[in-house]
Image (cartoon, rainbow, N blue to C red; front, side, top):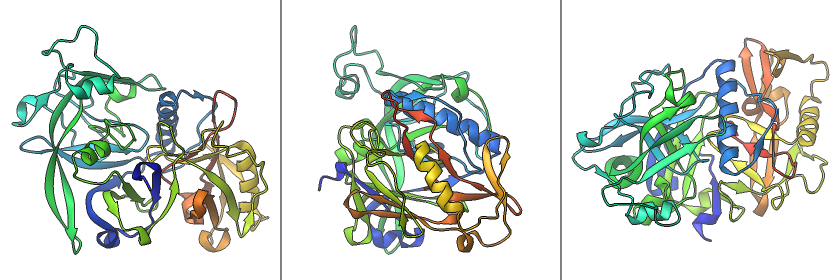
Length: 407
């Protein structure tokens, strides 16, 4: 099967990655928890970004939980310097803030040091000119008025009004490669990425979620995944295991030993990783839903996106699911936290008191979601529901199904 048409969902311990990965590149990821209001703002912005990329409309209000974004540390340049970037399967390029940027964030509340990339400070950095093949491919043709001394530009405007603008450079990316027996060794590869010169909106201010940039694991030829695959370094496959309880996890790029994983095909000709969700099961009972509720033709299927925090379901799915989940505890009294989150008092073990939820995808792939995954502890004895009612719709009015990092 063409690896470009398969999404691999992996549930493995980090310690086992050596037996699962063969010649993989490994990016350890970290996560920092933030306040509810900060997470809510992040998810609202995030949905705006992904929806603008697929030309969908955004409506309503976001209802995120107390989880955080995932980021990893990369080495760029020669000698390599460290950069912290958000891991995002919903976008296509790697970009970092550059020295020309006067409004780029200088500090972050994530406990990391931010670094501006300096092309002149790297012995192996080259500016990508607008007449190079990469630039023509990115813009689907020659750029009018291009001259060899003009850099290849990039510009991304997100749904929340934030924007990043700059130019492409080529330099070495340093990463860890698994050689076997759980041992890794540093290697590098020349890649093309964005050098951010102008940032606006939330990208241009220091905040508790400020990072050096974003690494996109999307399907376009401009993504790091596609570039590494094109150079013969790895196969065009990635897997990830994210810990939404303790934080952190791992992204692995490259070959995965088939018996260790299950797969489901991607919906073709989609900008993001869209899959076919067939049904939802709660305590061995399949939810009774309209047959076209997860329609992959008109509704574009279910989007899998690590850059989004939560799981968003169409209203009819959400209502039925919550009713089933709470059926085991009929005496619970629900109340709102910050007028957004449905919460309740509970002092027992949530994994014993609430049902397991299974998501069934095309080709018999099932993903088990445990109570500690879809419930989060707001305070001692206070738990809130992580499933959210979808606030995004396609142009034909269908509610969007979006599964984020908590799933």
